[in-house]
Image (cartoon, rainbow, N blue to C red):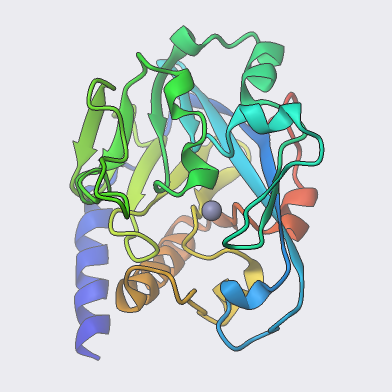
Length: 270
Ligand SMILES: [Zn+2]
């Protein structure tokens, strides 16, 4: 109960600070940033569907605001696209594939790396940061807790020369309330999600890996490898509150069934 009270209180305070209008945003593109085939979905749902294979989508999202372009997540490395069979990770058993490059999809839209004013990543797992260094000059928005979290071998996660804004909590990207980074730790120490308030579609919350697929969201299941189960559950509560307040849709990045129903770039949501 205590945790629930604190979460609700923190949530109300933060939301009170979020601007209500969203004048500047007009387009949201869903980009195909890879596919993950897993032999055992219980990797993400401990004890449930053990040994049952699953296919996951891996999306990137591109937002257009009158002040510029903002890229959310960068997916698996573009180099994977050169091998149609993909890459089988021996440790995890995951098969990683990319049918299209991120750069090719940006080219198709006429968006050059220099046109992008910022990149946010939900977190620093390899299926989300695969192309960050394709944009070496672009400001990178990441939670300080994620930036400072060392790799398993002790090395930093990012090149120190890459321009970075280290966040400690939520961040209104364009200053008009249209695109707001929401702090949702638990999957990793500095995991974050994205609220996009579109003029016609309405509000959308991009999940990051707060949940990997709908059944995990519905049942509040947390993968065993998350850095904090308690934070993960609190972040899911926080997102649920945001969905209710904003009448928002939850777009779960890795939920292939949902992703298959969505318009893909060059089509877009308004
Ligand atoms: Zn992921």
